[in-house]
Amino acid sequence: MNSGGVVQLQLWQFSLIYLLLIIVIAIMKKSGVEKTRLLVVASVKMTVQLVIAGLVLSYIFQNPNLVFVVVYLAVMIGFAVHRVLSGNPGLNRRFQAIIAASIALSGVFVLAYFVCAVVGENIFNPQYTIPLAGMLIGNTMTGISLGIKTFRESLQGQKARVEALLCFGASPRAILQPLAKQALETALLPTLNSMVGMGIVSLPGMMTGQILSGTMPTTAILYQIAVMIAICTVVTAASFGSLFLGMHTLYDPKTKYCDGFIQLVKKPGRFQTVQAFCCVSNYSTQMLPEISVAPSFTSCRST
Image (cartoon, rainbow, N blue to C red; front, side, top):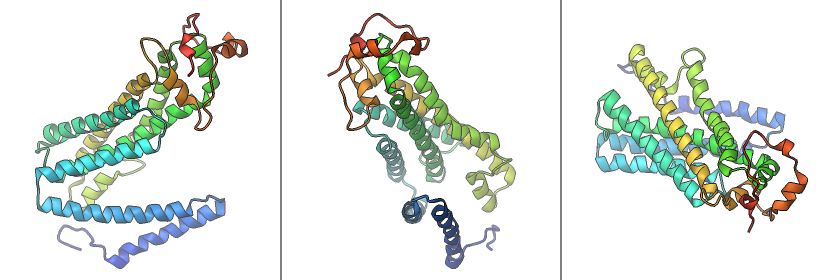
């Protein structure tokens, strides 16, 4: 134990934690979950990535430089965008650009406000900027991934209903907004649940780390409250921008032509022609929610 009261883990002590994975593997085998390989790969990747990150951060902290901080932030944002997009294939380029911009702009804005206004440090101070950016961008990546996934699955699950609404002349915006709202709620749910149970059900990682390093619990609590509010803000802003701005890329607001919308609700490999008259003959107005529709079928054109 050093002067700060933190127990320095020896390599053999640290390696004991991996024995817990045996319990996870045993449960997977017993329940028939075929994810053992994924668990092993994920554990190895996590270990290697964190070791590399630790070495890089040690060098950056010992040699603070504006360029290092900017590059590290760019890599974090780029990786987050890549993970979100790779988990949601089929989005058009404008939708992808909006997601990337939402993550980058909201993340950088909230990070700058937190570091400069709340903490009172230089934005390029790696000791504060990099750890805080990791928490903000990491939670944003999770929130947007859940939101976009929910949005896409809602469109695919309600494909027949959506096509009927389009063929009866309902505006794509009126159809998409409730789905985007539902997806936004899903994106925010993990963060809100964490905030509700924090301090009672769980002690968050940042607070635990600060306490272990010798920081007074009262100081750690203030930082953790500030971080959770910042995380909630950035997840909300980024998810809202991605969903409510991205949905407009699925149709032409002038002509109401919605080819991109129709293509998104189709499952890969099953792009079939949508004929307007089939919607009229196969669907009754009882299926339509309270959405104003116009006696026009041009909104359901197919290519």
